[in-house]
Amino acid sequence: MRHRSKTAKLKRNASHRKALLSNLACSLIEHGRIRTTLGKAKALRPVAEKLVTLAKRNDLHSRRLAIAYLHQKDIVKKLFAEVAPASQDRQGGYCRITKLGARMSDSAPMAYIEWVDRPAKSGEEAEETPAAEAVVETPAEETPAKK
Image (cartoon, rainbow, N blue to C red; front, side, top):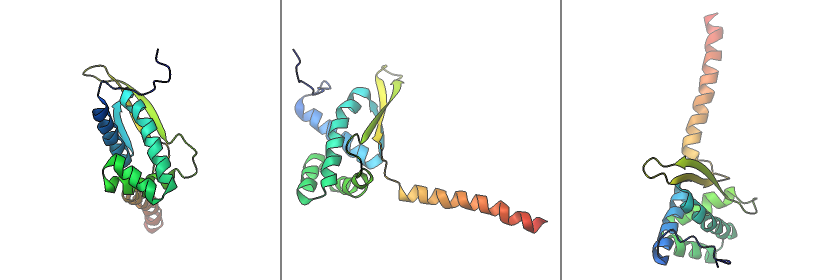
């Protein structure tokens, strides 16, 4: 019987599974949204949510625990600086899984996993916003000049 056996094995041994989930968590923190199989996304969600809970504590011990799991200091810095403050008011449920359908090659079910409170990307959105405002302002300024 499988009572309380929740771990998704993903057809890997323990060390391979830990490395896979660590790499997926790093990619999720770095990019904000990743496309993967549904089984891997469901296995990643508890790991990612525990990392966000660690980052919300924002102390030295939790930072060291996150570095020990993720093995990348720049990713941990982004987790503590961007992802955790965006989810500060939320009590849980930091990730969203969206099903996509079957993969063409082997019909594996695919899904997006992303942060519910995605941190705003300062570079891309800051560039898009003034450009949109400039387009709106330009015709309004030219119209009185033509009359």
